[in-house]
Image (cartoon, rainbow, N blue to C red):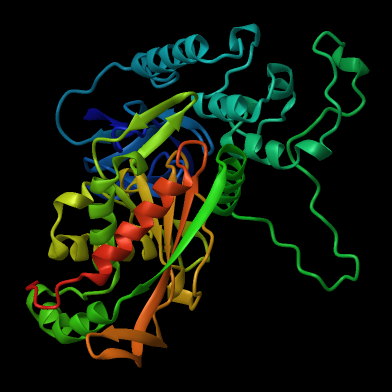
Length: 431
């Protein structure tokens, strides 16, 4: 017999940890190679960890809601063949302990709050949220954790933030525990229907995360919007002409989204100060143009997969990337790295008939573009022979941007450039 250490795999450069949400396999269960063992969640997406070998699970080192660092061993699988190791099973592997200790020390050094004054362990993610929300160490220690060994999980601290104004007063740290009649908790009692007919539904995990991110964005960025109307008649006619041949040749549907993404990527090249993020008093100019595309899920929630290096893809490549990410989003097959690294986001509010919208910026980006519904409208058409009224296909572009670093001139010029690329679309181009 041989023992195989199943580790939390690398999930992208910007993903350092994940939360265990569900063990699909338990101790004593057999598992086949590539079969899912555990389900995990990052800040943006749920994912699965498959087994790299076939065998029997003999040890599980982390429990549901535990935060695990990339590279840590999460389970031991006993396989046929090889020599059995003498690794102890009563305690986590030394590598796991060392990784946890290293994470704790790193967090202590990098955070502004002196977590060394606490005897409790707080994950880096919980510390970051505490730092962003201005939660003191005294408050953090008062939160009743639901994780392993009463550890405070991400959901615990988000629930505390959501109900902070209604929380019980926190007793001083030096006050004896016996003097505290009712400790503050992170969980607010579920509301009760007054008339007995209203249905009370708790938000799911993803909706809580979306709620937190949206409020964080509103509190962080000074939102301002610019709107522009675009004539996309040529694009509509061209797509109608080539879409059947494109699908037959490529096996992919040609939607409007990749065409719009192409124009946005070009405009970001023209205006690189829209392809930035803000860190305190510093502006970070992004080298790559990674376009996020907001996608609605069957559950009603929202997720933003990212097209990496979108400016380097032709229209065929963009169409394939858009369709692949959209399909995997709907089927819950996105990987954590698929939602990381975005530098600018596009959302299609026209899918649901909206003419325009005022979208919230996807932090830490500084801009987001909403695509309105394409409509047939009467319009004045200018010709050398004079003006006349005709039927044109038009839509609105709604650009939300962060007024801390993007002024009206840049915000307006950027969305105007997107419109110019769309209106000058070459109807004779090949695809």
